[in-house]
Length: 302
Image (tube, rainbow, N blue to C red; front, side, top):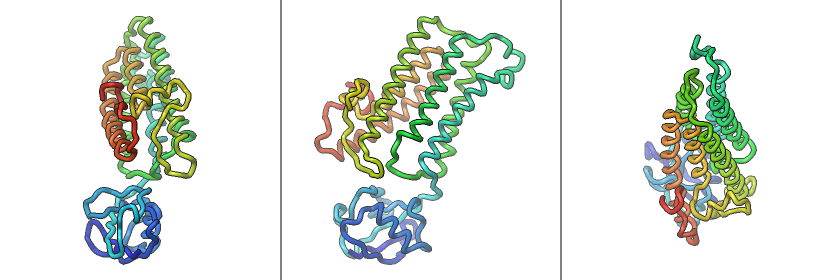
């Protein structure tokens, strides 16, 4: 099969390439990058599509599956500078850990003479929760997560880090403040128990998702419970990891009775709901036998 490779921005033809009909998009990007080094960006920066402004083709799509024929055009869009997903995640999660612990362990740098006031037990508990959460995220990034794409746009590094680091400073400033007022300890212990439950649930779901995809592949399957009771939430929602994540931050907000923590929880819940709705639509589109009773993120609701 001979295809015409076209620059999506300029509409100029880069040249023609002959490939087997069963070639997938991931391999085609590599071949295009190798053959047209001067005319096209590296494979990681390429987005292939059938129209100049069309939808990006999935790496797992095949030319035969896309019903392409000899003489058809494939458009190449330059996504700009890229950075590895794992690198972005590590930066996102290491930053909050450092920022929060700076407020917690060196209050004199932030609060001056007020730092001599003894801090509450709730503040210590909150620091432990924040530390556990982001250490868990770092370890999951290194040892658990398997990414569908190897890179993302470099600009996402600055956008994501600004969000996580900025909100952490906002939350940490108030929770570690010498004059922070703790709610009653019954509320704190109950919220801590719920926080621990949600963190365990989130980790359990990440393990289940990891096991869906064999190492070195991009296989996609319908996510299902794996025997761990905490993964049974898959029976009701498509993205229980987000459900547990929202629960963890709402628990942290209740534990501290801190408005800044609640705003962070709501901001995260909004973004995760958007992601969950998109993934839910993709699951239903990709798998004809996808369970109809499932919602995207909130059982019985959304």
